[in-house]
Amino acid sequence: MQEKWDVLIVGSGNAALCAGISACENGAKTLVIEKADQDMSGGNTKYTAGAMRFVYNGNEDLYPLLENPNDPRIKDTEFGRYTADKFRTDLLNFNDGRALSSEQNALIDESYAAMKWLAGHGVKYDPIYERQSFMKDGKYVFWGGLTLAACNEGVGLFDMELAAYQRLGGTIIYNTAMTSLIVEDGCVCGVNAINEKGESIAIKASSVILACGGFEANSMMRQKYIGPDWDVAKVRGTPHNTGDGLSAAFELDAKEYGLMSGCHATPMDLHMADYGNLNIPHNDRKNYRKICYFLGVMLNANGERFVDEGKDFRNYTYAQFGKAVLEQPGHFAWQIFDSKIFDLFYGEYRFHDAHYIEAKTLEELIKQLDGVDQAQAEKTLIAYNQAIGDGDFDPTIKDGKSTIGLELPKSNWAQKIDKGPFRAYPVTGGITFTYGGLKVSETGCVQNTKDQDIQGLYACGELVGGVFYNGYPGGSGLTSGLVFGRRAGHHASAN
Image (tube, rainbow, N blue to C red; front, side, top):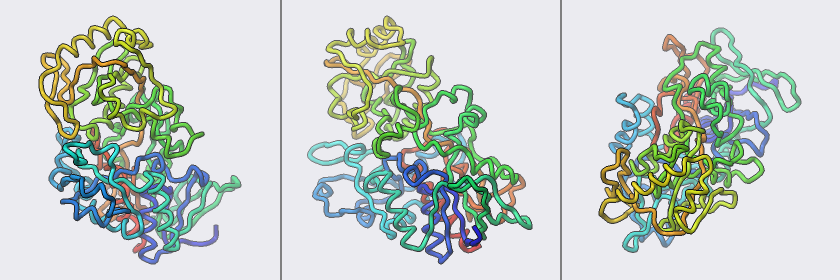
């Protein structure tokens, strides 16, 4: 391509498009290149439920973001508040003693302003009634600080962001894979790429923004950075996040930053195809996720529980428990439930391709648990039922209804599993995205191992290290892409 661009963005997901909107807003001639075809474009964004975590101080902060602020349910809804202090505490809980990083503070401090900015470009949201609220005393009560998702979830988020980017004059081309960065006079000034015809091309630009995801779809990089078990992990999202941006940046002595061994991983249907089954619509692919474990228990191949399923709201545990499942013998577990909680299941448990077994009695169910020490499983479930303490079950709060006397407690929402029919869902660990990445400056410029800016090179989204460590509060990933994408686009367009 002979044309020179002001800003060239590699990738087309949430972070990339936010960078593109920000750059175009500044009048920059902006190009997004995507190595996938048009249908598979959007990175991991289309696979998400579109939920975004941000600071808000009450209903009035939410109304400007809503597609339908006149929804009749809203008058009967308690959204609560999600303060900056609460966001800080939530992130610190996953930092393993680390102080908040500058990246984490930026995520918190800029979250609401970035949400309003994006809403101003036509990206609108709906309350997450199904997954984030329970009916209590005639009110929808939201829990866990996560209230809004993009209209039509991740697919809707992508569509609205792409429309905003193109309205501002942004260009996108597909089937174009970056192979390396072009450097002249010590400054990044474009990329080498392979186009849809298989031809090698050079695309020149004043600034390049890497927004092409982490290395979750690269088995060799997973094994190198995360560990040997991770070659068998299911990949929840796009097959195209193979670490291309990281590899290209490392060639320029970019600094590894953050927890390279860390990742977001959730319990997933054991029998799902990789990438969430490419033969079904994007919106359905997320339904292989299975995160209602807090309503029951999980058993491994030894017939034993291995996590405190009620340790915290699932927003704060699901991104860790996929790793816990993958580390079990055989890399799988069974989630066990009784009919008392079937009405509380998320839609993913009613998904047409959900795999489960059902039996009238618990004894019959246990006999169907493939790969499990069934005698020990029966002992575990009997001991669990005998350990249930008093108190009222209330999924809108951490109700303190716990087991008593078990070496591994269930700290909240502990109910006897005693009302048939019973169900068991087989799960494994599925990787969503990786936490380690690049060190970027306050302007989003990539830094080298000497903590100096690599001129002309910016990064955002999953490539930014230091945002998440040993887990994350649900909905923070998309918000991180928004915050750092907006920042990178703004500064790259001023380069």
